[in-house]
Image (tube, rainbow, N blue to C red):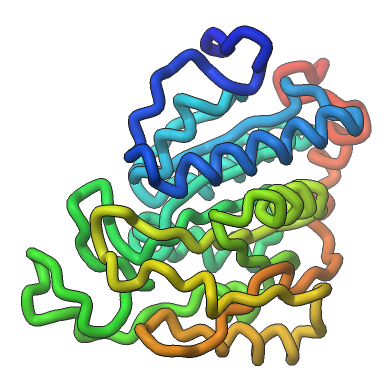
Length: 283
């Protein structure tokens, strides 16, 4: 059962938004909603969309975006999304997650989703900190980042999720700037349309924690179109997630076709063909 909608806005709930007023999470919500609205205008039904969330500031989107779904444990947004898709392959399933839960507790799920190619979309809110729990370092935090839990500074090199996804054979890999609402909307829409595992990293500031990583907009530029894998890998290495003057490419790095997880299983192909779920299958 869906929560009440705002009058005249069926995709937004009546829940009060409790993100920090200037947090880019608000912008990602807006871009995601506009992407879904655009797809509904193209013939999709609101009931055909479902979402999952992990634990983190990003997870509050579950309360504000009025589509069905499951609110999961930390790092478990991806397996929940795969489970929903296996239960009903006709759904457009979106997993919302943060850099903390995706690349720490959820790392194995992330890598294997790239391998298995389930037809889901993963949108990662990346502010390079565990902001919900007062700013600890995540796997994408920069070298030297000092926190209450690491007063001497982060010793480890940050992970490069774009490069990792490409290396793990993801079929759609993209990056956006949360402040660029139109570009983020267009990228999310393209990701949902893509048949296969779509990974969209959204770079965002945190207005309270890890302030030294903020304000990277002047280093960002857009890739005009998806690249060949070798070129995409090279572009992925341009931004190392540290405090430097390196350029930060945005856009769709790579897109290719490979059989999705449901296409490998005749039982799931049957559900897709009949446009039904397992629950509706006559035995």
